[in-house]
Image 1 (tube, rainbow, N blue to C red):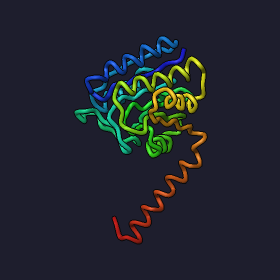
Image 2: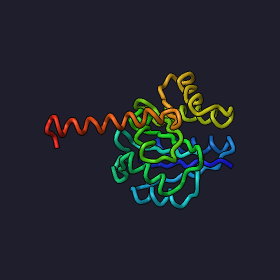
Image 3: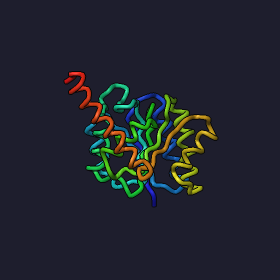
Length: 202
């Protein structure tokens, strides 16, 4: 049986309904769902260590291009640290799909940072703009239906979200992006050297 881990890390009033809906829909489709609420970074690490391996990991939080957090900021983690935690806890099955219910979770730099920091992450999907819990629930529901029930490739299942809701989501496939990931980070390192050497910035 395939499994999904739903992590409630946002703390918003609508979050319990969003996450319960995702868990219910997953179970309707034959997935085993584990839904956990975390209050700080340590609880997140403990939850990833103790619940086994998953085919889907769903993260509900506030987010930007650098990190994600809860409303009270007791949960506050860089994407690099999250990726390293996913790797060290060995909580992902092969071809695991990371579903980011966070504002800007579908940005290229977020996906590339996660891929670069953990070689075990296969797919990253998320919205490219700020959305409500209502939007997240409907959009990720469309994705799950297409990926689980219709057995559609994750990238194509993500494209179905736009057709159904007119919301912009992106799904990144590690194997397709491998060359781009290296180029992206090599360009960043070269610019850091340029700043230090040519612009005199420390």
